[in-house]
Length: 151
Image (cartoon, rainbow, N blue to C red; front, side, top):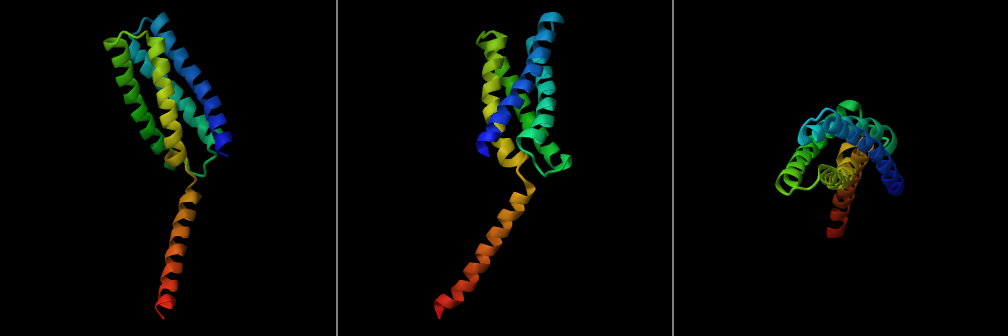
């Protein structure tokens, strides 16, 4: 399952990244917009694409949009600010060309996002309930075994 999720996440990420870069480069090169707003606008377009495709194809979650949506938005907001900070540092302070800076930023955020989305955003709600039930059952078994051990 993990291998399939990683493969799907990379394919979806490629599609979302293509949308992100198309918007960013279009704004920068055709509209002559500043680099950072262009990168952030592209990030938002890529993020929406990412949510729709990952929810359906990568994680196949049973969470509703209300449950997964706010989680995804929170992770996306963190990624948005990381993109802003890294792009500002790399392009303005270090003089890295904006495409290379964005490639580095995208790679770093991709790894972070996969981990957080798998472990929290899209984690199957039934898995959380099952985990809680397993913990409750283990505690019951321990409490039932304790009196027998003391006899």
